[in-house]
Amino acid sequence: MSELVIPPGFGLWTFYMQHAGISHTALVTLGFSVAAPPYTQSNNDASLVAYGTSMAALWDSEVTVTRLTTLIGNDGPALRFESSGAIAGSRTTQSITPPQTTYLIRKTTGFAGRRFRGRMYIPFVAELGTQQTGQLETAELTILTARASALFTALVGGSTGSGGLYLLHSESSLSATPDPTPITALAAQNFVATQRRRLRRV
Image (cartoon, rainbow, N blue to C red; front, top):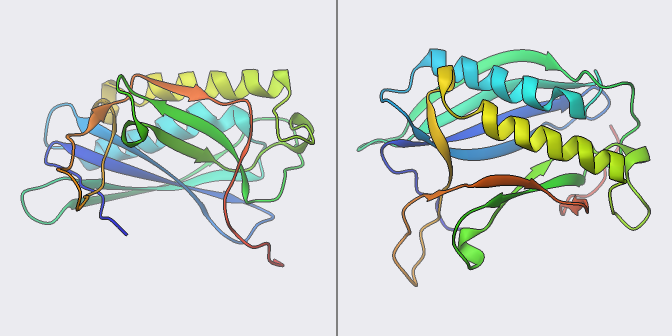
């Protein structure tokens, strides 16, 4: 598997989420630029809060945003930061679909081609907001769209230490690794996504 490149001046957030009824932890990753180096522990703490508060209205209180680990590009080994929390969802109680089903948010850039498209798989999809075909109900899509917009705004600038969201690229033996690509929008998609994970008893 190709290794993701995090150049100096850029970072990779990994947000951790837990559902009270599911044993495994869900992860969401997002690249960014560092607005004014050095990135600090205070920036990391603020980024965790920004993510949790932006996304809380998508989930009920059984979902908790628990942790953020961040890798910052460096001339040597990447720098690592970790923050812990317990930011619970604020939505009314929801039954969810099986855990390999996720919301899908597209990371939009100004360039064409597969290499310049990214995706975020957001866990814990509300069952009543999803049709049998996998399409989101209109009201559910509205909620997801609002959360994606709020996230894009909350994670840029201010105390997060981020100068913008970026699509990071992996090494390739076929071509030079592109520089990180600015993400121009986080676009909610109207169909859920699936990930290849076997169901297991908890």
